[in-house]
Image (tube, rainbow, N blue to C red):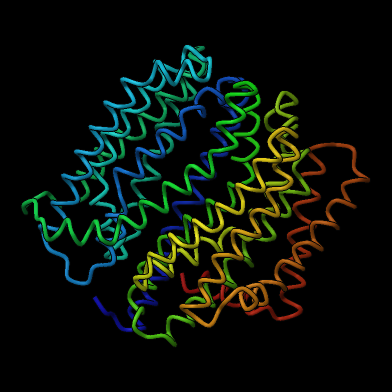
Length: 480
């Protein structure tokens, strides 16, 4: 599995291009589609579709069980490994769909939302389609083939968007979101099987399962902890408040995390396979880790903090005043998410060097601490909780960075030292945009002027002070 440094660099550059193409196209389409849907649908519709998230996420986590990562990392992969993972995924998918189908009335009663029973029965069908393609995507990642997944993703986005918008326009309400999701799963499955020539040719192997489960079970445990932790607030809001409040929380958080998801969608699939290929060369591993560390924050920080400065005009202009309550949530989550890429970076590092137990240890520790902070905050409302989320996010990243120091030379202090210049520059830009926009009354003008001033200031200062990250970014673009 070992490749030369030059070969890895060439594949990495191609990966950056295709992931960038996929994510810019997908996120742009998602943003546009989301705007239209938010205008056609209500916060209540988004709240209902968000209610069963925790159950679907836990089911999906069990279905994969970390096997995809195990397949990517294994140096000598056999057909039995692939076939064993394939049939395991299918079996677990069927089990969890049946379970959710049977318990859907109980879940609907828990949230006091009768329509959720039928919604869950339909949207959970995605659990049957996902297992049929997970091995294929693991093989794409293993080969550093990011072109095929990018084309698949882009080709489905516009079709499913049209389905959702069409049904919303016809008055289907929450069902527009349900059938949009199912259409995406089915179309992706069909294209994957047309594009990939892999078919299960091996047999179920106890030895293969032992390896896959031995590696993946730690990721499964970590994933379950992470899902439960991340859904404490949505479950509480859905149960104690209303679907509308959950819809507001869901949209505010969704818009705030859009830049983070896009960046991780571009860089994330590269980190794990690249770190895996240099796992035995500590100097090269440290070098790649540092480059990713500085580059992701150089890109993430200005986007998020510009979003903070422009949150209100963005919400009012694009999705109207009926969503105004999500502005504060958007701002707080966007601030917290500035350093979230470090979490993904550290997790990819642990998985690549075979230290998946550090993922588990890190997640357990940070979740215990953060839950102890979150629970006392629940009675104080959504806005207070999301504001405290900035501190909780900092704690989570710092905890993982501590464990990263055991694998590389980049511990907590070193990681923050590397990213501090970019965060300081982005924060200054945010303040300037706030000040400038305070003198502008028109919402659209605030968006245009704020975006231009913020972008010019950030890039200009980075150029004047010769930020290496800007040079690396421009080099990638020129070589494309």
